[in-house]
Length: 157
Image (cartoon, rainbow, N blue to C red; front, side):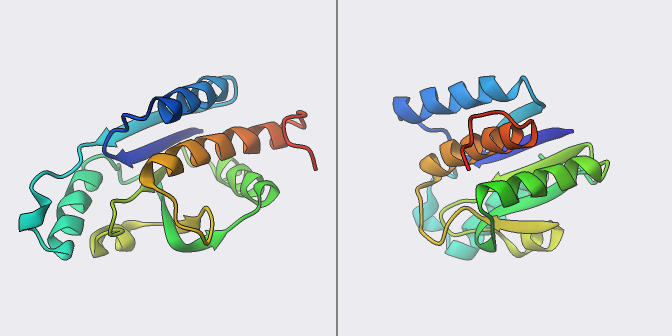
C-alpha cells in the first residue's frame, strides 16, 4: 500500500522541513510514502472564502485518482489515539486499497466537492495546529503506526 500526503503550500521553517524529512526517510522502510504540495493561492484578498476553497478543491482533485481512498485531515474528523490510528492503517492495508491519500486543507477547510469525494475524515486533535505543524505531526504518527504494527519499541505503551 502507498500513502500519499497532499499539502497546501510549502513550508520555509527549517525545523519542520528537517523533522518531516527524518520521518519521511524512516517510513521508506515500511511502505511507499509520497508527498504532493499544491501551490498556495495567490491574491486571496480578492477571493471570498468559498472561492478560495473552490480553487483549492480544483487543485486537489487534479491530484486524486478515482481508485484512491481519500481521507481528509479535518477538525471534525474522527479522533484516534496512536494505537487506534495504527489499527486504522492496518485496516486500509488489509482492504486491498493501493493508495490512501490524506489531505491537509487550506486555512478555511475544504470545498463541498472535496467533502463529497472523501471516504473519511480524521482529526489529529481537538486543538488547532498550523498547517506547517500538521505535516510534521502526521508523518510522525504514520511512522509510529508502522512501528506499532511491527511491534517495534518506538511506541511505548
